[in-house]
Length: 168
Image (cartoon, one colour):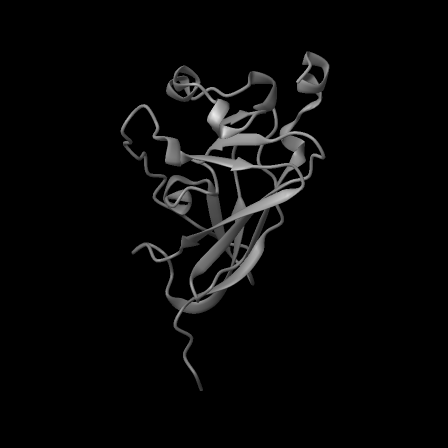
């Protein structure tokens, strides 16, 4: 890859979509790479693709009717360093990768109301290359390609019903 094409790569090519998952209280997070030529590898920690996304604030919740925020625990998760290779996700040009995030933490409402889930925050580490080309040193540093980290993660919100609805 030439340096000029490398400079043209941007996390603006990466779109996050949120949708209902395979069962109630499951959020499907889909990452789409809109680039025609760039493969991206990214560290999923502290992103919407992290299974702890709601606990750490990478995803936020608000009441869909009132707009009132549901405060999360804003946990700091201790992780074994350096990250393992399975924490790196690769998305090829013009393709998507999806993960499901369970919304079953004790602090979440279980009242059957509809809540809006939103993405919040920056990418942790993104590289404009296949995951196999991310070196152990790059993974250990968790910095990614610096020019790719200027963008924040963007997506539309999604509305989900949490908990058991009371049937009348």
